[in-house]
Length: 172
Image (cartoon, rainbow, N blue to C red; front, top):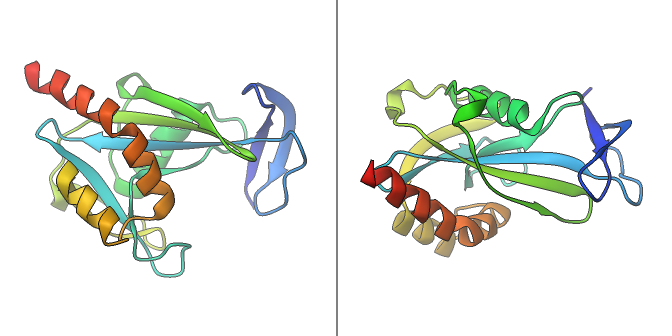
């Protein structure tokens, strides 16, 4: 059984916890974190959702719900490690933007990291494949509906910010 902190509409913890899988009350929000790992050579890391998961067989970036007691950075560090085996310090993650919908607060991060595909450790039951994809390849996956529509929308909104990070990295 997993529990998440309850936040208000302003992103402040209320001191309450929510049991995952149960309905949210009006005015309650949970925190979800996502990260775009980019290699500095024009590619982002995608994982494929395993059979049995919602949106099974579609590609996505790493992320998930923050557990009770976790900060946003603690949650993204844990999620990335669980789903890929990539270990990163909290200070390495750059916040791209934050967003909110019905009962979810989102923090979107990026992380510059070069990792060989053979060094990625997928989490059984969560992910079953991994690839580095160029922005053009991500657009093609979106066109073919091979990326979860939620992630596709996030990518399209965040692509300009990711491109700026990529350009900045190339200049270093």
